[in-house]
Length: 289
Image 1 (cartoon, rainbow, N blue to C red):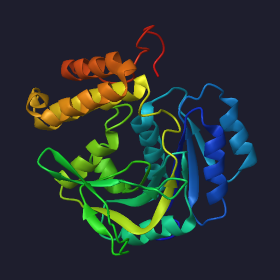
Image 2: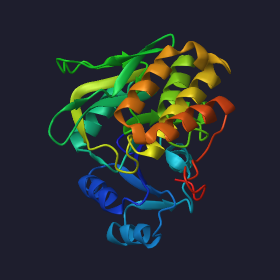
Image 3: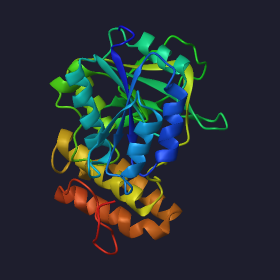
Image 4: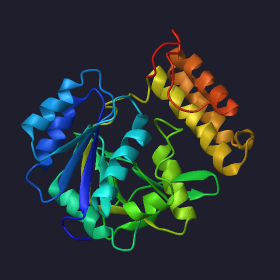
């Protein structure tokens, strides 16, 4: 990959301060940067970002398209501009040039590259997994051997993608809206015969939950709805019935977060019914979250 063949895409949704920190960390690198503003409440924030960083391209979608829709907008733009690869970044990450360079170096022969991730305090996240049938087996290189590993799934918080492959697969499935879309994308990548690599040479700082906490009612809804949608899409309409792990996960979540019982059960029900796209407020039926 040539040094000018990579465009870094940062998705912004009501998180302009975090997004600006990411841009500031990368503004002096050799890579192009594009911020996709995904229908933030204050549209002037994206304009102010452009004024402060004139070399950064800003796309305003005009509405919240979810992670998949926002990143698809950026990927299609980057493909039209002639870039060969994109690096998708969440605004709650703290990328460094060395981490990105390691991912670039790892990309030869691979359609997708993910990377190790740690919290602000250095605690490691599980950011990759292998699949054995429907069973997800988390992967972690305990020794940080620096060799890299071929895996089946990597985290979408920082994911380097070959655009030709993304285009051939129709990009990410926007029906998931939020959560599971990168899992579905990785599944389709490996099913097509392309390969995915996990970089363990360096780790990205990822604070997580910058736009939507996984333990919020919305987060719980998407987690369970999209788990069912994924099973329906790839294993049949009633595949969730033969996936006891789904119901064990739901039970554990209800016990830990009893206030989210309605969101969890609604998510499973909507998944069974094939409901896709953005969630409408669970109590008011109002605006998509």
